[in-house]
Image (cartoon, rainbow, N blue to C red; front, side):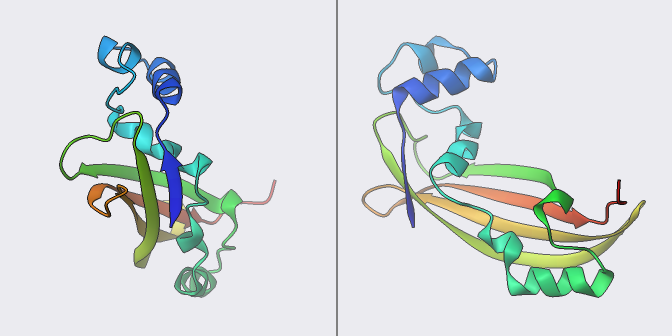
Length: 143
């Protein structure tokens, strides 16, 4: 489980960068996070281990797709909050788990859909938020 401190300066930067620069995010040292702020977890934790899981590699091999990050597309992220929105000054602990791998036929050929969940718990161990990711390995023509 990785640790993700929520710093007010980072909340402000994120709000400005994503055009969510409202006073609630900019003026309060204990500001709530913009909901998509959880995507910044990649700066605290190496998420995405699940896209390298053996089940994913096996599915990719079945359809002849190299399970390389250069062949990986991010398709969807869904955020779910349990209780109050996390705020600046709090610390979240995150973990990740794979929950679905399937092969799907797309317009350009087969793809391997990978769905995984990143969970965010507070210092007391309470579940505060979840992010469900859907990514896909696709076959790319050599350039």
